[in-house]
Length: 81
Image (cartoon, rainbow, N blue to C red; front, top):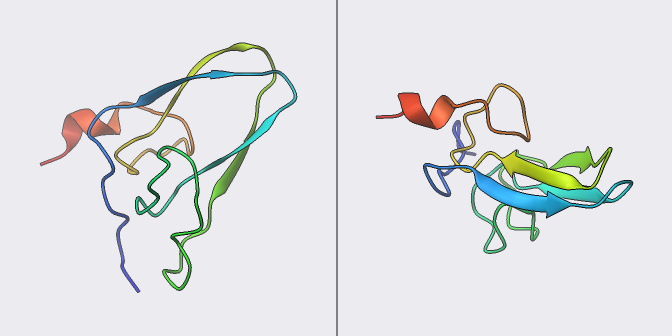
């Protein structure tokens, strides 16, 4: 079981979300459908994070998986490496 998730990309994923719709953010970094879960976390100890949009708007889902504000970007990618 990995201690840290795989970095999907070192920038956020901008996504236009729809009010009332739920999205499942990939927390493990292994999904082929970034930034969303495709089930690749099986047997990793990670679970997707549910995000329900409060309004129609653009949000920035974390791509580096190091955010403290899962599932949204908090700028942590700027401190990597």
